[in-house]
Image (cartoon, rainbow, N blue to C red; front, side, top):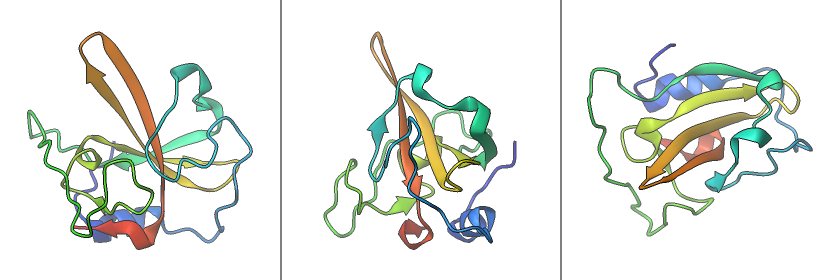
Length: 126
């Protein structure tokens, strides 16, 4: 899987000739981080673009980046490539709606929570 390590690389990786559309599948809007059970993930229409997780780094940082006072779950939160949770994400492309999405798994105690967020170039920062 291709490692995407900067905002510029991520923007280039999601550049597309086809405009994104509103999705009518199980994903929904996913404007901010949303929990999405594994059975709802439409694997057949998804393609992996790359990963933001550096395999050379054993434990990525949990530090978040919110210079405008946003929160983790805010749709307006910046996609800061080297910060949590983005530094643990894979980048996916949906063939149905042409959107790009970020996906990672939150592990807490006995709970496993798959989370998804729509990716838009204007939110990507280093």
